[in-house]
Length: 182
Image 1 (cartoon, rainbow, N blue to C red):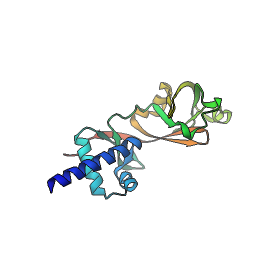
Image 2: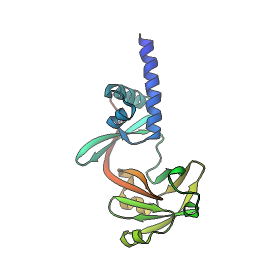
Image 3: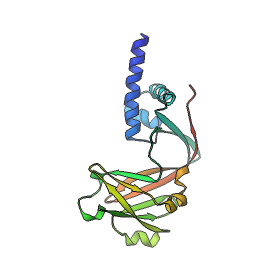
């Protein structure tokens, strides 16, 4: 009986780790909903993955509430934005070598393959950056000045695509990184 549980636990851990790697920064509740698993199964798997140093948790304060967000151990730095190439119109020259990064407001960064006069009018500042493109994704490094402005090392970011532009929403302050009790 113990062998079956151990095998089942390992299978659960592998499935959950794949989801965490594909969707980093989801909460335990969001992971349970995505996989349609009971919260106890998610909790057990998270504990095992944490003890194996396969994942880590960031405690975030969002709207006055603490939320535990789960990340793979090799999470990308907070200043790197990756977007699957299929979400943008990359075949045209708009997303060829560079992009324009706009500090739009206190929580939104806009990224475009071309200059956006309407964004330039409302942005705090603008920087032109180089992009790296491969068959699967476009990779951009947010300039240090913008990273500092938004305090991105201490805050949670969500990347979304709107038409042929990218929006990075910076929310909630990361309070701590923690391990589950064993």
